[in-house]
Length: 355
Ligand code: HH2
Image 1 (cartoon, rainbow, N blue to C red):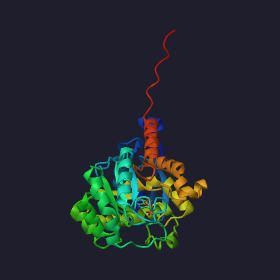
Image 2: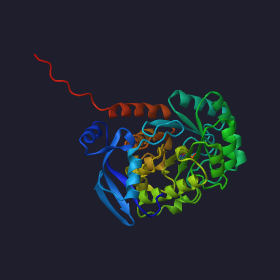
Image 3: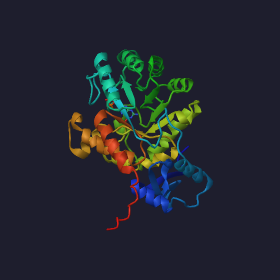
Image 4: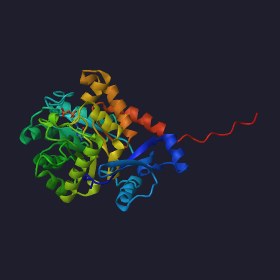
């Protein structure tokens, strides 16, 4: 789909009143027929990159990529690619980097999941294995012991659940227990049976980019152009999923902040998030409380990184993301609601009333 070949990156992405004005004047075009618009394209051909206006004449291969920027993507798991949604993080682990140990007891996890849904989370992401840098694999039996009772109960209460796992047996058992969505930080590459499970069950899936495994990824963060290389590598992961029989409409994509990316690489990837839009699939991002928030803010304590996480989440929405994976659900939902209202084009100015 991407390879080393041609690709398009929307540039000059604007939102709200500016987007409406530029689109009306033909100076920009709406991204995915949503509230964002872009005025130019960075065009990659081989090792060359150049900037052209959004409506420049393009060779056929690039023209069909541009068509994917203009069309409304098919919804994923019922969620539109141009509307913001919050996914609450529920780690039933002893060692997750910011909420480890808080939801290991199933009763506590269930209470936390219900509270997140009440606070406006559209999806609760239940995981039983920490994938923080340097972490080791948790055997699927232990992972399932941690999460299945929680999934069963929350599904019975009507919540939409995703299972955050790299293991095919855990995916299968979680879907049986009532989860609807598979979220795999390895993009269904860690477990050779994972793609088949996802294809056979027809479950929506989040494919995330990383290199290596959480245990090895720290030494693999070498990029010449992080945005371009992540796009190409995620494209290969997407292609492999499609080849295994997973329908494109079942896929959401995630660049994997903090997974084999360091310091400024994460920031550049966030700034250039629109490069992923030409896949024509919804974008999920997970930056909540991560080290990149600590690096920019100087806050060493992960539990105190909520404000910086919200700043990054809103930035991601303005760059084409729609799904936000977060720890602080109520606070993020409030911020998103205000951000969404600010995007609405202003009502036309009425003439001054005659005196
Ligand atoms: N990040 C983590 C885990 N799962 N899934 C997706 N799709 N995107 C992410 O960025 C992502 C993810 C790591 O964060 P967390 O779950 O908070 O911590 P831990 O891995 O220590 O449990």
